[in-house]
Length: 415
Ligand SMILES: NC(=O)c1ccc[n+]([C@@H]2O[C@H](COP(=O)([O-])OP(=O)(O)OC[C@H]3O[C@@H](n4cnc5c(N)ncnc54)[C@H](O)[C@@H]3O)[C@@H](O)[C@H]2O)c1
Image 1: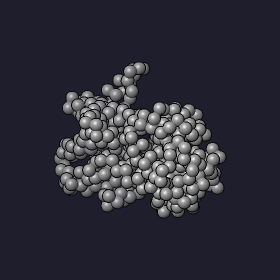
Image 2: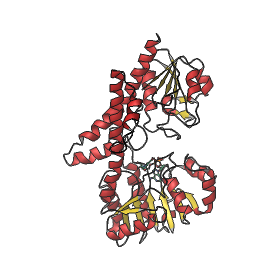
Image 3: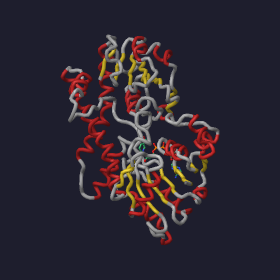
Image 4: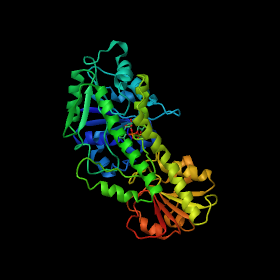
């Protein structure tokens, strides 16, 4: 098939590669010229996509910024960002822009699929009117469906192929075309009755995680008061072979999805005079977790007779999770800001994040950062970092990920 992918980020690029590997001819469209230049030069900017994979599909992936290049495509998949505005409301500007550009070049018979996460109703309320401009009829002149992306960047045990794909079209013909499209790259395609069902299913998956992370973070705060090791508690509960699913405590939630998606659902719910309290409470608890971490840092320094002000604090790991360089909504950023506000001399090391323009910082060499640090804060435990050696190199460390458990070091405190 001739396909187009709009938005070549964490979601769109791996998807474009998967379709190209399946033998399709793929136009990859992005508005970011730096990404297009990387792709043209065979460089990958996504950890999950190896340069060799790019090279292997080379002739079947055509990077472009020109929407006219989508005119000969049978199907177009939209993977643009759906972030929050400053007032924590859905920001659909990228989606609207992409929809208007696609609509301007839409050809008879094209299938358009939205993969970006959004609240139930987005496909029907935003995309359908834009694509129907000029009297085009969905299910006849063009086809429209929603199919949520379920990838987990950095994960290798579940792939695009092995993760079941949900599809819900505006009409049965739309659903059928979307099913046929994804059957090329996914072993299982689950057909749903509507785009709204697929949109809400995606939000439920992420909110389920958000609620459970909030719960275990709250238990971590309680354990701190009770003097109980939260990691041992979670290990113990996890021995139950049914009825319990493990979630680990940490410094808070990050990424494009978990901190954002609950607000999308809450926004839609409010339109219907419904207040999803569970969802909002989870967001509140998780957002407060970096502040709890800073209080733990203050307490640890206080125990060593040092104020935060003027203390040299090295943050180890700035990405929101291990093995990737994504810092969107990363709790490490909030922790660094709060420590800076208290007068700490903050530096960070992250092998995946060379610079943090929002903090005005660049990643320091680990050994240099450790030398002279008053406190090491392990915020994200990346693979291939020797955390035990890092802890051994400083007078005091605090570990928000449980990576130093069992190390026997007596200069490290844990969440
Ligand atoms: N990252 C994840 O783990 C993940 C997982 C599941 C779902 N999602 C969802 O998928 C969507 C995309 O997320 P992402 O992480 O890939 O974002 P991203 O920021 O990594 O990639 C989005 C890309 O879209 C491009 N873009 C923006 N506006 C455009 C436009 N009008 N035309 C063409 N290109 C445009 C950007 O330049 C960028 O390269 C979001 O809705 C997100 O919630 C993300």
